[in-house]
Length: 441
View 1: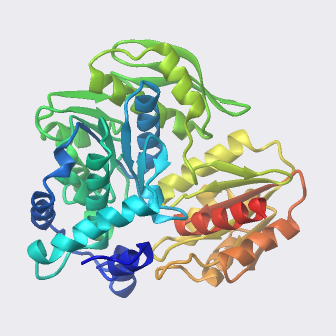
View 2: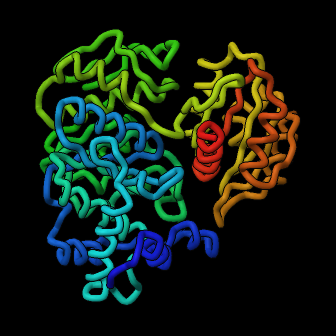
View 3: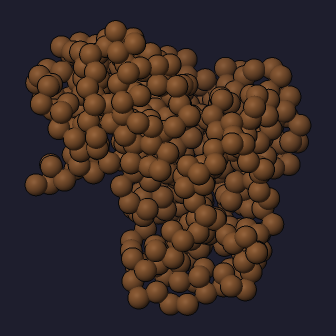
């Protein structure tokens, strides 16, 4: 099979099983897949996932930002880095980066052409999933580039995730929370067992989850070493600064004081500390202080407490679950409370309790909540979000689409206000594209 252009290739890709469409039809708990079909595909492609060392990152929250921090440090050290993250905000190309640049259309088309060509030879009866195929495209692109190291973010869980056909020398688990329970639950112990699946015997595990009964689950995977948050590595000072955070960091080999991080929210300080520990574990030594400072100052994480506008200040954050909403609410209160007032744009996926999410986000302190529907088959009705906001004592209005919600928020906001666009990453991605087009125009 040869596609005439990337549009045809993406149409072919979209014809495969997709998580969002699947959950929109039947949201009940699912049987976990296995990796056998993904391994067959890797064999047919020449096992590109084994072309270089791998750092594998999972966790309920913070895995994208942590992955970006790791990749930025590797790049600052002079390595050629492949970074695979999900989901994308505006373009599928964002998922696959080499040295900070998203894969271009020509290279993505080339990878998908190869994969489509071998699909018929190895496809199981039920077919491959959308995520399996885009993960395979990432492995192919990284092998062809080629890169010195891959940083892979788990799509969901870990044990049965398509990325787990790669054997990581360092695994990072940021935390364990209650999300995606239709696949991973019903308890934190169940979720931990799924995430622990990325830990390979003989590897080093950088573990941000410190609950004792969960630690036993991770140690049961027989890593060569476990570097535990608060014991082996830590973010000992984590203060707001004009452009992000000021951190004092400790690893098994060194301490780094007054490091300026260009990300907002105390949770990002913890994510950077985990990333630093992961890079140190990868090399088995401390990291040059200049590298740490340069990487911290230069890292970005789109859609995660990202400032994209001024007068009024516009902040984007994909607080997709209760833990993420709590972290975002804390960041707002700590770093943006000096602004006159808060206007929120909120859209969520089905299955989230809007009142709990809004409460965690700090909606009670907002002058206005603009509710919209997330642009996904699982988007929750905007009317339900507005109703939940009013139950908390908030003024709330309904806007149909994300574009309408952004315009309503801009109409109501004063120059010294904060517009906070949050909830589903589908909302954040759509708003980011709208605001980017406005700036370009």
